[in-house]
Length: 87
Image 1 (cartoon, one colour):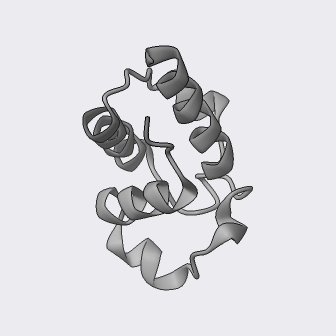
Image 2 (cartoon, rainbow, N blue to C red; image 1 turned 45 degrees about the vertical axis):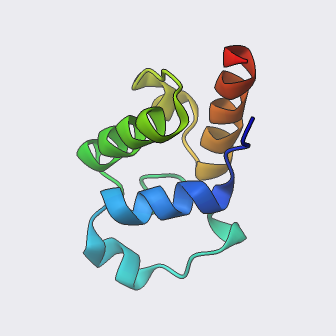
Image 3 (cartoon, rainbow, N blue to C red; image 1 turned 120 degrees about the vertical axis):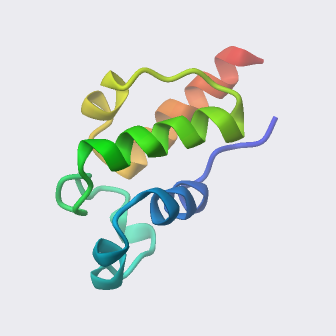
């Protein structure tokens, strides 16, 4: 089973988010504890991100998960838990 990493999430966030946001953000491990709001993500971008994660990794996630996992680092943990439960 493939693990979902912060790099995987960053790649998806870049594709699903507002391109103007990413020109202002230096990406790296330091975004793990930043809030999605602080990173400039709106609900549509986050919905697209979750849809992409579901498609690419074969897990089912509710949109409420973003509110519970308000940071990229926490979302990575939640996705990995879903992957383990799927196995």
